[in-house]
Amino acid sequence: MTPKRVWDLPTRLFHWSLVVCICCMLVTAQIGGNAMQWHFRFGYAVLVLVMFRLIWGFVGGYWSRFSVFLSSPSAALAYARTPFSERPGSVGHNPLGAWSVLAMLLATLLQVGAGLFSDDDIAAYGPLARFASNQWVELATQYHTGLGKFTLFGLIALHVGTVVWYRVKHKHDLVRPMLHGYKILREEVRATVDTLGTRLFAAMVLTACACTVAWFLP
Image 1: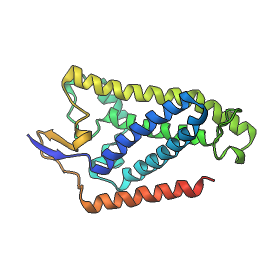
Image 2: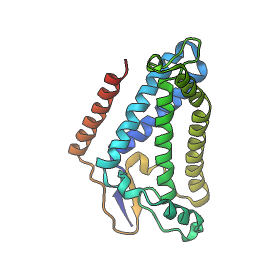
Image 3: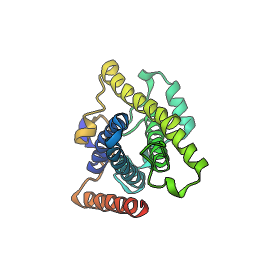
């Protein structure tokens, strides 16, 4: 068994940055008041990060690409029905994990998008709320404070619960590879390219996403 680099540095930095920003976004929302300014700032950061990850899913490290780790829904369902002891090993995300990652990205994007149009009728309102009709703002606010929030909570809880379950039940650590990038594998697989050049390219993509959000928002 040899260690292979699976997760490139941009993917790992994205993952932990998203964790921090979402936690801060949730905390500031619960505090309210002046903290809502930071809630919006963390929301903008989350939007930049998700945009980056969606792009990186096409041009990033090998095991971070959607074309590599996303399987068909039928394959994911078949994987779910297979007893754990009989499931084939996975280098990156397994079929179920892959779809949960995509679902979390899309749910996060929808939640932030709805927040841009939300208005609490007190003091906090999204930067794009004034450009939308009252009906659209009301729908966006209801989704952001209701279904969207609880959907995101559920997906986060499922993700954390799965990581804990793998660690406690099967002694399979999913956290450390996302810290240092390596996995110990029995089979010979393709390693992710993670060089200074790819990291600079990732920085350019992230900067482009940040500039787009800064230009788009008033």
